[in-house]
Length: 345
Image 1 (cartoon, rainbow, N blue to C red):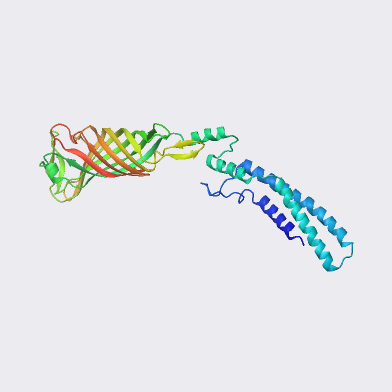
Image 2 (cartoon, helix red, strand yellow):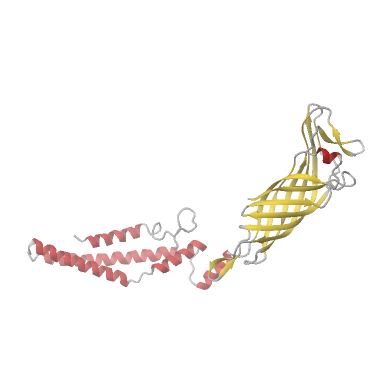
């Protein structure tokens, strides 16, 4: 009978029923589905109610007019013609009244975009800009990190027993990294933090680190076949340096620009220093097994420099000690060189 009115009613019912689900799907970052702004929901509910009221009012008037038409006892063809004319007239009237409501979809979408970005309703451009500046402020935080590298000892004259017999060695480190961007739009930032570093030296050729009664450390032959030998030293490390981010400036809107600091391609250079916590010498084989945590003349203090190349959470780094691995005259000028990867967790 009145297809257009039925369709309008269905649209009204549909809008009212799924206001918070389908009205504005904006493909913005969400938890699961886009959360609808309370202001947007209220506006659409109000609009849907007004549409429904218009349809019901015009529907009653149309039904009343159709009742009068039915009493005229017209021929079926004439009745159907006048009935269609009435339906078209009321359909056009409904369309005009709905259009007169002046519902601004663009404004509603803008409000939802702002809500989705900032998780709050914004009533003014000044408030929006303040929210954006707060959201995209300079990065200043602590973040966990993990790194693992292959370690060797460098020496201008690698002819001592240690250099000749060193095997696969490594450096494992984890800690907290301080990221301090100088300004929201600055590519430069300070890096620092604190970490725990475990440096492990392994010897080859059936050798191990030995210590005599006088505390003298040497590389000695094992009386049998060694299954495992490693001397692990733990340090408390503190880095300090600068990082540069090559990412372009990004525009958050409202003339608010910012430079990513912890993402994209970055280069960092830093110094580091550390204090020894303990040394553990572990030997296992078919002769004597032992674990010794005493002093093996490992340097109690280390310092050096590091270069790091990063992309998002993955890093490649090279670090070199400026201090000797051992103190005094024990294997002089042997300094640790580590090449490895790091992950920002």
